[in-house]
Length: 145
Image 1 (cartoon, helix red, strand yellow):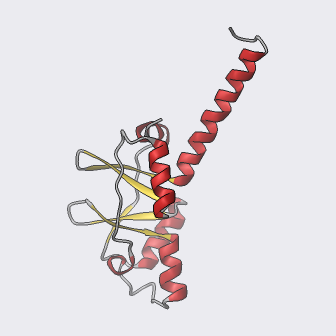
Image 2 (tube, rainbow, N blue to C red):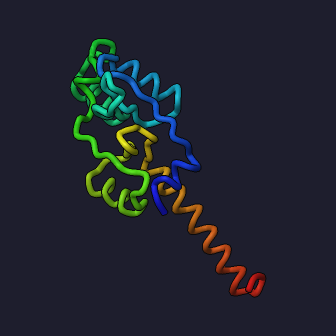
Image 3 (cartoon, rainbow, N blue to C red):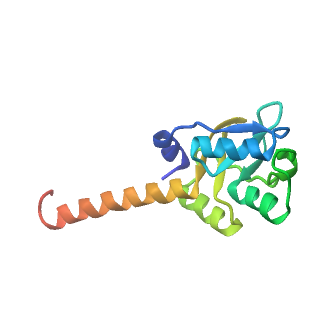
């Protein structure tokens, strides 16, 4: 299975903000869209970083930042790994697990086309395995040949 297969079902909508927005605005957008991460883009709409629920917790609870006066550019994770639509899902999940991040922006030809989370991948794996088990059960019991 490829990343593009997940994006085909999930869609390519990505919620983005610029680095001059504050972290409170980012948290409000995450709540509004029921997502765990906001992609931070530069003036060319290219990924500059990512801001996650974990980043918010770290900045506010541990470092005591003022959420209304701390720009995303100061709080975002800047070391961003990017995936491609043709990337293998298992490889992407392995990378996410190894590098300990949960959201992978997907670029195609220099354009942002989606974001895939570990949850998206696990959900698709589960659906695939349920279908496979159902098919094998029907095959073994003679319902299909």
